[in-house]
Amino acid sequence: MRNIVLKLWKDEEGVTAVEYALMLFVVIVAVAAVIPALRTAVVGAFTGATTAFGNAAP
Image (tube, rainbow, N blue to C red; front, side):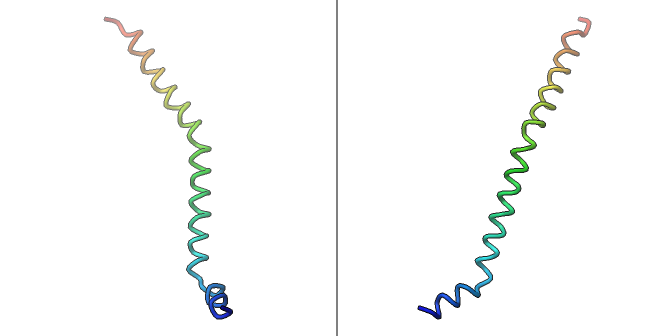
């Protein structure tokens, strides 16, 4: 049992999985922070285009 615990303790591959999980978490948080600003920009662009087409002469 002790050998198994020591082998798992020294195993570096588990650390890599944890690092990938942390990086994924950071990316998800960053994307979640950017989405509201991106939504505002897209809505503003479509509103401007709709206004421009609405004010165009027939």
